[in-house]
Length: 189
Image 1 (spheres, rainbow, N blue to C red):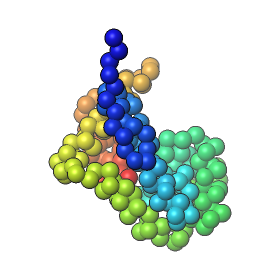
Image 2: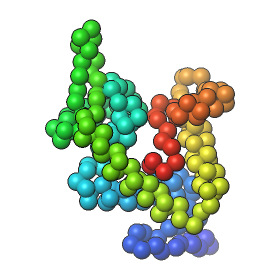
Image 3: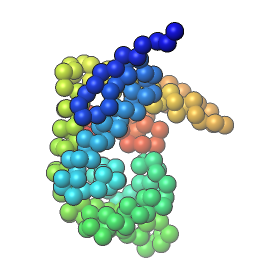
Image 4: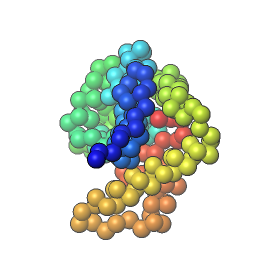
């Protein structure tokens, strides 16, 4: 006898399987959040792929291209292509230090910096839509839960390396960094 699947149809997306595992629900929520932000960015002719890099640069302007790649969680060739495209659009410039010609540093232009005031509210709006009907306490608890899940999985997947202690994880959280990625304050998707 097969188990009946409970589904809720939301327009216009696919039905949600209420019995689905957590991983699938998180993946589906992430896709929905991404689609909503992508649509808002597209209306302003901003490539969705540039969003991640801009977010990082708004907080860490002038970091190396290697560090930008690490914080974005993408491979160096992808970062190189995105930075080149953002440079062509006038959002960033690449610079080298006289004493270190090997390392390339990425700096926002005034146009790249000005996009923050225009684009961050779009992400805030997506978060507001996504959390409609939830209390601030529920949203805070959900954020903490997601951070814990990410940390747990990253610790578990660290093959051949020592797992971080809970105090290290706590210190990383206080510093605003989750295992190599910048943590963005609530509302700054």
